[in-house]
Image 1 (spheres, rainbow, N blue to C red):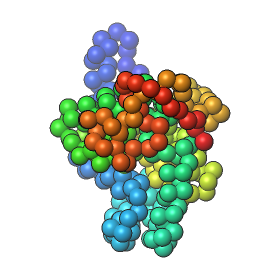
Image 2: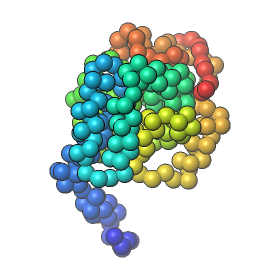
Image 3: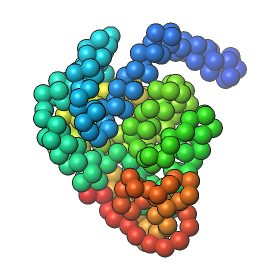
Image 4: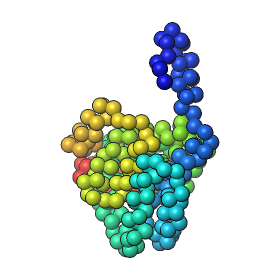
Length: 252
């Protein structure tokens, strides 16, 4: 599309560009399905998920051809061929024991700082404002939760948290690729659905790899004890919300 004349009011130019990007109902439905499949496949591979592996692989095989669909197919080919115990061990190794591939997105943007607690609260409020209740089983920045919200709420506001945490997603993808994990295919599929990285994005990811997320000596109450989020049994170590005393750990 050729650039619109500068004489056209900015709001009109914005609306015209938005109109050219509108998706058909079929495209929107296909995008939501991709996001939901990524959400499911990034969850812990319990018996229900592993038993459903062949059905998930069939759903992936039925997707229209796209780079994202090809990445999902590569993942489900591995997932359905592995033994359940091996899948569980691999998942724990990748996502529970390695901070560079943690699935808690606000960690990459804010580290263990007060800002992270506020970001978690804001994200939960975003879900509630959209009429969606996560039921408190996970922190609101857990990637499968963020993906489910994106699938339900649509490309605009629903995908805003994914766009906001794009740099963290790139870091997770890099870490999984370095580890040779097939889960890299799910992150690669997700990144094809987001805007391409800017030079600032690349520089920020390089800094994250070298230095880790922000940290501060003054900590706060564990996020999991906050009344909004229940008992926090799924909260990762060193997760905080306002106000009170300390703890902190660098990105591994």
